[in-house]
Amino acid sequence: MEIMIRPAILRHPDETGDDDAETVRRLVRALAEVQEAADYVTGTVDDLRRDGSGDNPYFRAMLAERADGTPVGLALYYFVYSTWAGRPKLYVEDLYVDGDLRGTGLGRRLMAALAREAIARGCIKLDLSVKTDNNARDFYARLGLSRSGSWLPYTVGGADLETLATSG
Image 1 (cartoon, rainbow, N blue to C red):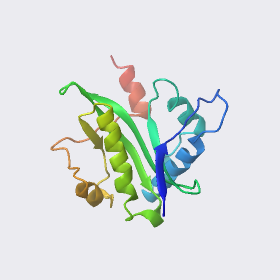
Image 2: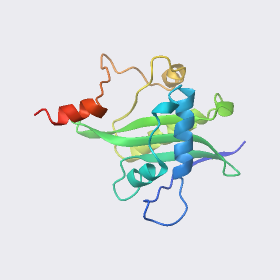
Image 3: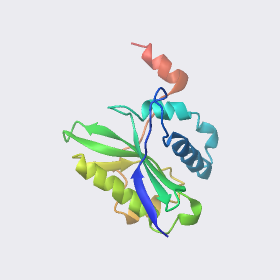
Image 4: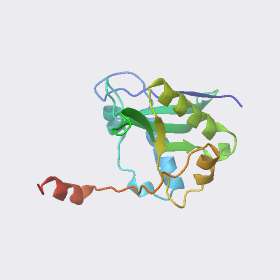
């Protein structure tokens, strides 16, 4: 079965023309369903269009498609900066492969495409975070990814973010 990986096209909500925003949102939701977290997906198609388009998008995405154009995989990523290394890093926010294609090498192909993008952009690393109960942890380990030492992710959002913003 032939599957092509290509950059997703996202147009600003004010622009005309077809784009991949609905497909990206559908695949993000499918990933959230696999992780039993679908209720957390609140972003809209217009949010994706607004934030994934323009000269400096907040994120980029790659789509994996069957020869007939049916989307079967997604890699959504953005760039962050390592002050210690003085170089950019590529951060993988979402990686999704349709259930019937898991174990076929498509996930590896998406990760390889991300690695090529990272190298082309001068990145020193490709980073991602994985839930402790995610079955894909073994997959990432087979690709050569390792847990980042003693670093633990922290986050703040919602009302706590508002409180922090007004605290100083």
